[in-house]
Length: 166
Image: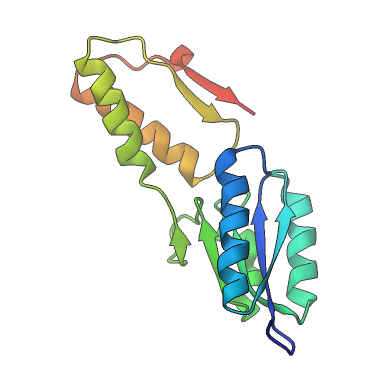
């Protein structure tokens, strides 16, 4: 273990409901431990007030060496204190619009585009898109890929086939 002030990496994700989130926590904890860090997990529940409170606590904690964040929203202004804090951080699977921030994201546009295109080529036209009931970059990107594939193949976009879920 690292001795001294900065020995902890904070991970903030919406929840642990998905298998991916649970596996991510386990894998990060193991890898960081090998490098002498401790992983601490925090859960925002996609609540901006809760996220802001946790981030304030983390920025005041001298043990925090870095933050891995799945931000609740894509407005960088909401994270100005974090950006200016000097604490290294990276966004995970969501990022901010219009500003360059270190991020690890899936290519949601291309992924949904390819999946929708495959279904259309297989003869399907009434293709449902399930989206999180949140506004952030990943949701916007998925909708963009879906619409792009429909338009390319002349399939009309139908709002009733886009279902928002929690």
